[in-house]
Image (tube, rainbow, N blue to C red; front, side, top):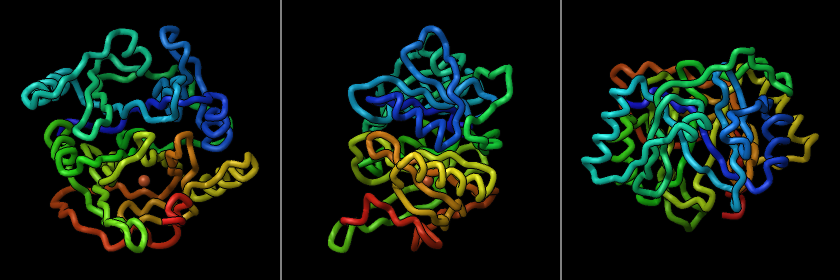
Amino acid sequence: MAVKSLGYLALQVKDKKEFETLACEVLGMQKVTGPSVGAENDYYRIDQRAHRLIVMPGKEDRLYCAGWQVADSATLRNVQEKLSAKGVDWVALDDSACAVRGVDQGIGFLDPSGNRHEVCVGEFKADDPFVSPAGVSRFITGDMGMGHVVLPAPNFEETFEFCREVLGFSLSDELPVPMGADGPVLRVRFLHCANPRHHSLAIFEGEHPAGCVHWMLEVPDVDTVGLAMERAEKANMPLFSTLGRHTNDNMLSVYFMSPGAIGVEYGCDGLRMDWTGWEPKILESGDLWGHQYAMMKDL
Ligand SMILES: [Fe+2]
């Protein structure tokens, strides 16, 4: 397996101040001073890593990239060789780009659906403890990484094979999603890497104008989820989805809305999987209960 975990995400947003309200007041992320080379960006912490979310000023609201951690330089070189063998262009991150991401070295490239991925080695750590401005005790990260991200993949099978071959992801399971009564059935494939999180990446067989369907942060318990829902209501933040529990990773979660109509899943109770002898299956339903998606109501 190549990828260890989701290390970081980088978003481009039109209004960084508006995003800060969501990140700090609702989600409870800690805004921190980042590297001097990337002073135009905002940086957010959720654990002992220097930062996990990079928010760049942009002309549009969209995901810039997903940053994947690998164990060492040899693994990174292996990824580079696989990309070159497939004829996929990649660029090395220079010193400034590495500082912005809080990594020692890394590369960037596009998958067959045009999503930008970065693969990196090393992670900068903070000296002081994580302190949430909203009183969140901690986020569930560690060996399971930052959380997960769901990317649009209209070029579905090719993107799936790319994520398997180049990044080393494996299939956890697949969910067919009917797009309304008369619409097509589009698939979501949930993919795991070298850690017990049920999925660090999922690909959706459709388009998304902002380059990301949702990203997910995990917190320790249902009270932390409920308190965030109250803070969102007080801040007049719309929900992307109501509370519910997923069938595959058991996550009890709500979805907030981040710029670009990208969902932010915020949940607890995610399973720690043992992948020994795992047989992927096609799911009949994505939810045990709940999760009424605002975006899907009109479909
Ligand atoms: Fe999710």
